[in-house]
Image (cartoon, rainbow, N blue to C red; front, side):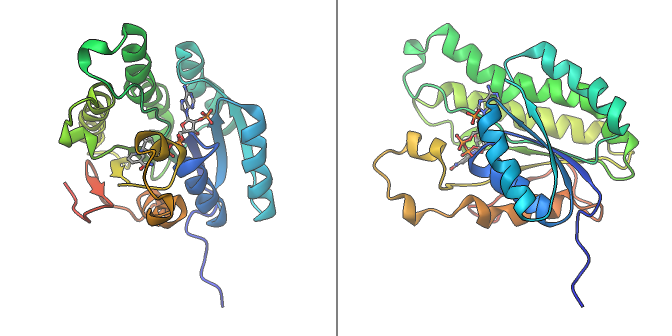
Length: 242
Ligand code: NAP
């Protein structure tokens, strides 16, 4: 007898679902029976993931959204409420690397873009979706951090600052929901075979890196109603939990 699907009937919103880690997480959730709300900038790329989900027997709702569009993020909560009245799983995965250069060479526009996409957009997502996560019997919020949040390497300024801020944001949120059924955690995937990694380390042999699919199981575990972890940061490179 096959085991029951771990996310059967759950409604999950994944940002950055067009490729890389977000796409792998969306597919893993669909395989476990979740209905997906796929968020990404380009309709065509979302449709390709939608096709893959359908091929698995799942289904998805597509939401074309640039996370720099603050008003559109703020409208998400009311829109999802109208149709579903709640949200079970939020995955704040979308992110950009931004410039790798000395702080003095970073343009104000580049700084703002990295902080907007990697940090402020996730705060706005929490702000608009928190009431819906609280309406679920087991709301789960998962955000994607990076080793850069703590390594603070030279030339990685905007990205490092954005991820350090994201960790502070999500742990703060976790403390605020401690006495509710909502649970919020972060995952640091570690070096993973995606476009972003290739951009950061162009000389690297991508075949030596783990695939996005190989890290998706941790996203499933933290999305399950049975998950009791809250305010934790799971480092998939070292296996440490902070
Ligand atoms: P990726 O392949 O470059 O994918 C990034 C995703 O974010 C894409 O779906 C992209 O959508 C989306 N995105 C970027 N800017 C956006 C915007 N303004 N509005 C909406 N969506 C936007 O990168 P990845 O490696 O999968 O990264 C996923 C997360 O993992 C990021 O938060 C990253 O910081 C983190 N991370 C990755 C690694 C790694 O080694 N890969 C390590 C540590 C942390 P489009 O298709 O529209 O561009």
